[in-house]
Amino acid sequence: MMFTRKDLRVYFIMGSNNCDHYSPLTILEGALKGGVTMFQFREKGMGAKTGVDKKQLAQDMQRLCRKYQVPFIVNDDLDLALEIKADGVHVGQEDAGIDKVKLLCPNDFLVGVSATNEKEAVQAMKDGADYIGVGPIFTTTSKSDAKEPIDIEGIIRIRSLVGNTPIVAIGGIKQKHVGSIISAGADGVSVIGAITQASSPEKATKELLSNFR
Image (cartoon, rainbow, N blue to C red; front, side):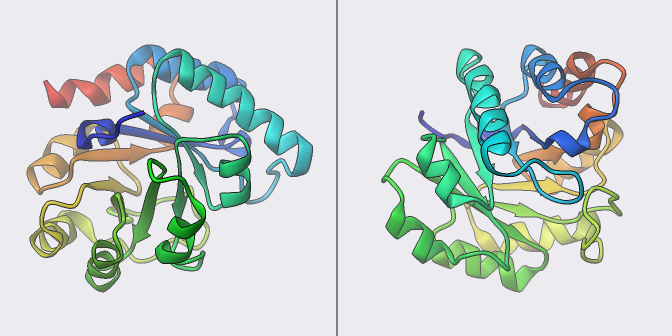
């Protein structure tokens, strides 16, 4: 699947433990119907599935993403990403380095990297990240170990330093924030709760996408 920066417009992240109102597959299909442009399987933290159960959920979600022709990325589990032939993997600062990851991956495999500050973003660019997830932009409850928010000004600074490298903003983002985030230089927004906690994941996704028209 050919990656373009437009794939980052509404980048949805979810694991089973992010779902309160509906099942993970129901939420994902709603988001896909709404037009989500990229999906990351992030099955970690308290209550997350492991082993065979984790792999089964990943494959079920991957099938849905393929149905809608949306890139399927695995968070912080390169072995699983390679085993099920995902479209890519996303790594954090505490995970394996990009150089090591890329050595193990097919040439068309996407490798995204999280950056919580300017130094990390510049290093990710130099290391050849296909895209950089920058943030948290605002305070978030989705990660217990989230760093200090970088706010809109942080996006502006990082964009000025990483040139044309695609960047996607993450952390506490709601529909009302999207316009200013894009104006600051991000290619898209990455969300969890804005979709998983919505009464209609499909409608919530459409509302996020409306900022790009």
